[in-house]
Image 1 (tube, one colour):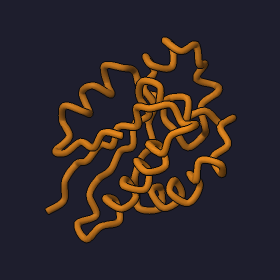
Image 2 (cartoon, rainbow, N blue to C red):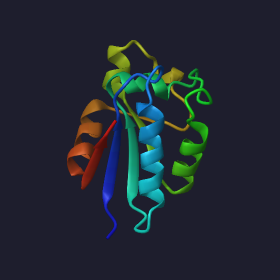
Image 3 (cartoon, helix red, strand yellow):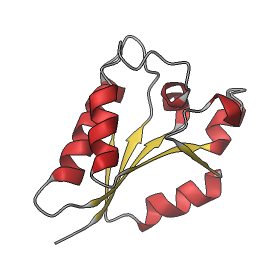
Image 4 (cartoon, rainbow, N blue to C red):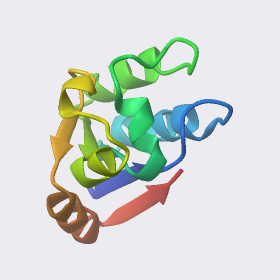
Length: 117
């Protein structure tokens, strides 16, 4: 049965495995037998990983992101978290959609399942 799944990427990208492992899990959920609807959301300090200046290769992100997008997954960033960290929307990678905090909150509440990284 197809479900709406959201993966929260909450931790800063460098020195940790949470962002790439969260993206790996997200791509697996999106590509699984049921082909769930998947949103990977950069929230809290995870928004640092949504910036275009991030070395995605060093974080082992390119393959995970490409596969996730190929499976119809979506990458979003919390606009409120960006503002709190003085990150301008123009700094966010082209494949990431910035959502207002309240819209992202509504998506999280509406999801059937949530994974937290």
